[in-house]
Length: 102
Image 1: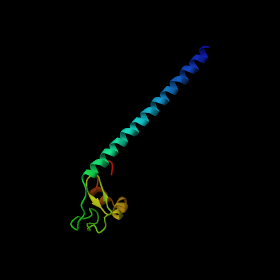
Image 2: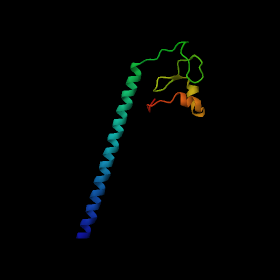
Image 3: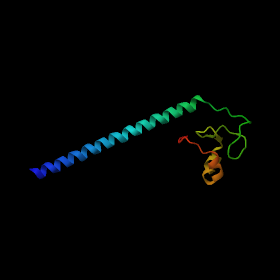
């Protein structure tokens, strides 16, 4: 009986631990989602108006298309410049930002 009691106690403890860890994971995911939603809302409140005077922060060419990438630090780049940004270390340094999301 004592052996069975030890086994059941350990099994219950493990089950409760797994359930709590699962609840913690779900809670953290929900909190992260709220942060993303807030940042998205903030980005929508600050619209970007493109003109011939706005230049890409990587290649320094003006924007001829309405498609672009906006980094959290506010810098604007062409989509093709953003795609090649990871291979160019100088532009990665230029566009680095303390915020984590785009």
